[in-house]
Length: 72
Image: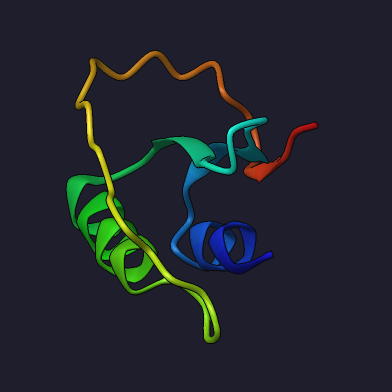
């Protein structure tokens, strides 16, 4: 919910999902300032969470992710 609500507020497209190993995977597209703000928020994480690492891979815009949501 944390990533989804912030991504939608920032006007990003993409998804978030929990991985089997306990990590959280996010793929997002949008403006550079919005993505940078989103990364700042992800590094902080939600209250009561412990963020150990945020790995970022910048890629070319594809435009095929659709509205930001949670994937299973």
